[in-house]
Image (cartoon, rainbow, N blue to C red; front, side, top):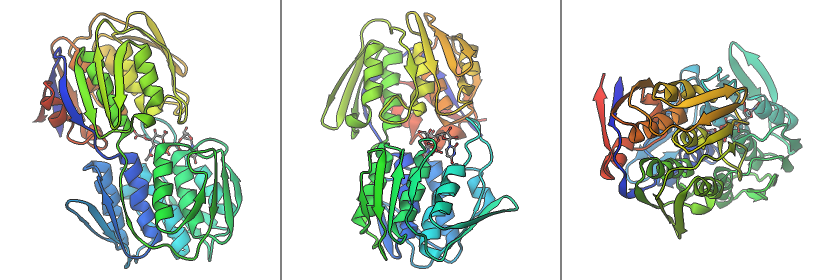
Length: 416
Ligand code: EPU
């Protein structure tokens, strides 16, 4: 197992190219199951989660080839199953359920178990598919779904769900009649998926609003698209510049996907200037403590909560950070405390009293974004931090140590 060794205290200076978005690429890859033939995705990030999704499609019979772009040929799908081995390593595997059921009328997908950040059930995906006429049974830990042809329905999600919205939007593209999704997720990744589905011939209106209307069609045709930039990776590098007191220019990003994050970081004292597809960020004086609450898009994202907490741990004052999406997404708190952060948990709120400086310590990564917060803490800390179990980080940050080293960080990957 690899670990990262970071010698903190270097202000980061230079330019970082933001990669394609993991959470946009995953549903795009799953959507290739909806149309027989050759799909092509440019700017797909090289990440462990993407490789897991590719393995799943290969298992199902797709032919994949990823050199400059990711090509997926879905003309010979012959297994309609997402096995436990793959779903347990990546919950987003459940995104194949809607497309498989819509195109092949059957699907067998392992139920994801709990995970480090919360229970994360898929009941809303299943309930919506049932409303569209699917027959769903649970069998030995698997969801077994059948439908000769799904039909349109009016579906109101009890809670905003990103992959739930994506799964049902994909299924509805080939269903008979009109499906209306209410209380739908508005995340940029949902809009990017809708754009690709529309390019394949789907009839979708309202993606990016809480109500999406889909008129089912008989067939879709494969085409190509470019994966949108990863807004969470960009947000993480903004914090990296701020926490080290450096100056970074982020290239190939979408500032309009980061408005709530940019607003919060500006309140915290960072100077941020977005122009076209670049964002420049620097910090003059000490960070100020500000409060944050995670909410679905366009509000402050849960996927930036841990990184923001690392920044607040060296803020001037007290910051209250509430996590409203996942019930257990505070695994980084104990590890940040090991680095000298003063954080107390009060239910779903973390009370962060800023300290002057963190100090390097051995810490352990527990989930993807928690790991990112430890890297950020380590970059600012006095002395050496060793972060173990960084396979979590490799799920979602492309070449993180190469990108950080290029802007001056003293960071090294070593084998444990
Ligand atoms: N929920 C249910 N039932 C469902 C679906 C969701 O109760 O059927 C609950 C969840 O337990 C959670 C809330 O609804 O409390 C929202 O979960 P959501 O379904 O939106 O999360 P997700 O689709 O599983 C995606 C991202 C996550 C990101 C969340 C929230 C992908 C592949 N994953 O997960 O990304 O945190 O939306 O924005 O898009 C990450 O990249 O680190 C990551 C965890």
